[in-house]
Length: 275
Ligand code: SF4
Ligand code: SF4
Image 1 (tube, rainbow, N blue to C red):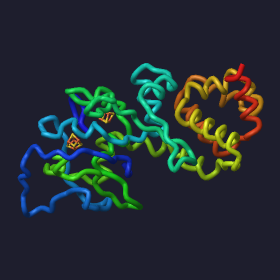
Image 2 (tube, helix red, strand yellow):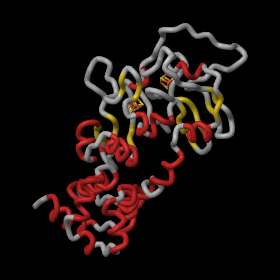
Image 3 (tube, rainbow, N blue to C red):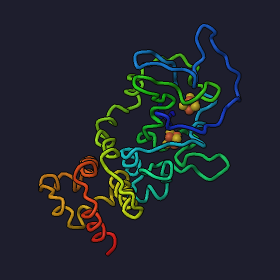
Image 4 (tube, helix red, strand yellow):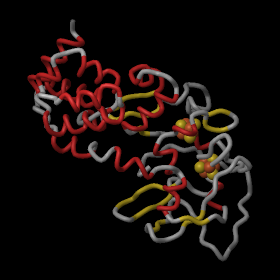
């Protein structure tokens, strides 16, 4: 999606169809759309710009999942504490009613169900837009397997001539740094175990949500309690995570996937949040 001045995995769904312009397609080229699949080495055609009839239309009535790094970047862009950002702009869901929570942008409740950040001129947080919005319309469908989240009657950019490989597209959209920054996120869900007891599992979910998404709350948890002593955090690490958001995020991933201890974490939680 394009911004004001410049230009999911299956993270996109529920898009409206746009039919306000006739298709004019070069018959020698295959029509691109949801049916299209390509590898990282193959080229796809796409260009998003404000002259397209669909400009901004994909920023409505859509599920946009946010990663921990997205939440951090967007909240800082808006000058908000992570908790305030989450309360104001997001919805938390439990896939299948259990497991770990996921975070989505809360669409406006007007007739258009627009994203709270879309304006007539484009995305108002373009520089810090989420991963999903950067990747669109490309979605990841497997190991070195990609496709499109939209059809060309919705996404007119798929009718444009500009060619990209996935790597070129990701570089253009500034996505390259995400993998390194969020490398520690994936192991958490395999290493953090639920107990089968609902109150304890609720605590585990709250810890996961706080550490991964509500970083300012996690900072309070670490620095306004016995956390540093309880979990034997070195002075060097404590110094680096005190003011550095990215260092704290990565420390949190590592802590959840490695040093997390249910009983100790509950004691620390009570010291800080149940005073
Ligand atoms: S964050 Fe920006 S690009 Fe993404 S849906 Fe909202 S307005 Fe569109
Ligand atoms: S529908 Fe496609 S071309 Fe149109 S604004 Fe969205 S991403 Fe760009």
